[in-house]
Image (cartoon, rainbow, N blue to C red; front, side, top):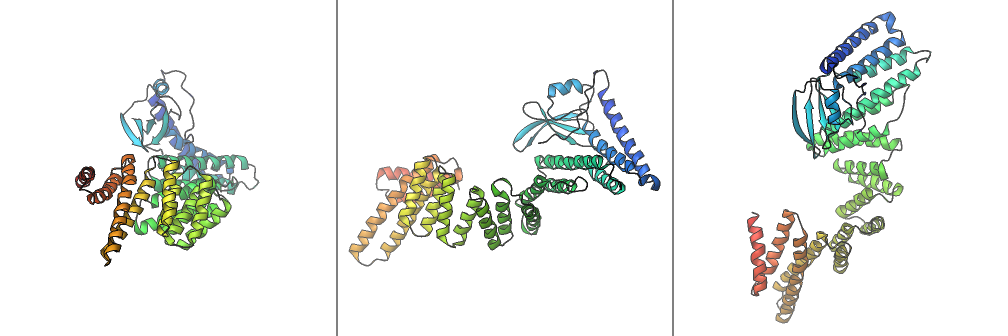
Length: 449
């Protein structure tokens, strides 16, 4: 995360009252804004570009003042000296994104220290004014309008740039605190501010992040609310694509495809994926998206294998790709090819459980089909042949299932495998080995209920 504070000069002497220093800074910041605001309200002074520059600067200082004398990257031990006179109102631990922070609360801000005792975030709890950044940007826009001779272009640009950066900082903070809606809105403001003249820079990073955080938020919602946020995300991703910003390995295409699918337009989703694949043939996210599309739609199965071959060229040691290939062959009724693909999973990664699961399910389902055929067969010889084949195939599913059961760390998956094993072993329970297996897996299933 980028630095979000204006680092203040370290106090030369710890005898200076830190808390008093901070209050004075806030008081001074408030007075500066009020004074600058009064000048801006004067019609004569409002025609002067310097009036608006001063107001913009005053709001930026008011934005920074409550953050106190700390700075990001400072060690807790260092700040204990620098801020020895600042009263700590309380401490607590807070978990954010799986990381535990020590939080120290001061009069106007909370300081978040990471596990290494380094100040990672500052959250203002008592701002001098609400919407300081909005007000500062408005002042700089007025300054640009007043600067008819373009003498202060550089100063105005720097001011707008600073506002844009602070919006982005606020967005990253909101993201860290889990407020995705606020993060998306702040990234949007950052991109919009950056585009303001005379700075007029395209902030593609904030543009994409506005869409990305909206997409994340949409995935936590349902119904019309989810659709609204997917539509919002779609707008930012489409805008990024229009300015030829594709993200890492064409991720914008993958996100647009996902959004289109979530909004019910599968054909548009496929178009984005195909277009993205043409531009970024090595993008795994696009390839996986295309594979999932063709698997779910059933369209042009040959195309799936072409895409899988490309994916395997990119990641030759990715066992899951062979698992997907096995599933596709199985759905197409190509048993030998499916088993070969599942076996390839084990060859690449012997600890990848799903290859064994795929093979086990294929054999189990085949056994069920043979049992049904046998039950409908009137000829005794053919019936006995089908039963023998049924038992051979059913017994064949036990080994891959047991291997998967031993490998899996997922309790839900283990129970599902145990259900298959219980049913398969039941057929052979006259053998004490299979009786023991049946008892074991039946217990697992029963205890999960």
